[in-house]
Length: 102
Image: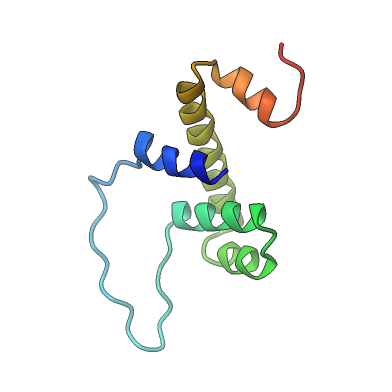
């Protein structure tokens, strides 16, 4: 799974043109996390069965934003893996879930 994530970073990166640098967190203030950071941490922690990190990432953004981020991460991962394997995204998604090929 780690190779997939490493490959994903090379193949698919979020568009950062609209991002602005954030000011460093002041003492006593929590760092602002975006939904993609939350989703990446949540999914990685879920894969590692790290409940503390799952809970932490879940508190960074709203449940709706986290759900969107996880969905976006899944789409990007399937696309990257499909390209790497030379297969369709549907074939890859079904294989990852242990479903018979259509």
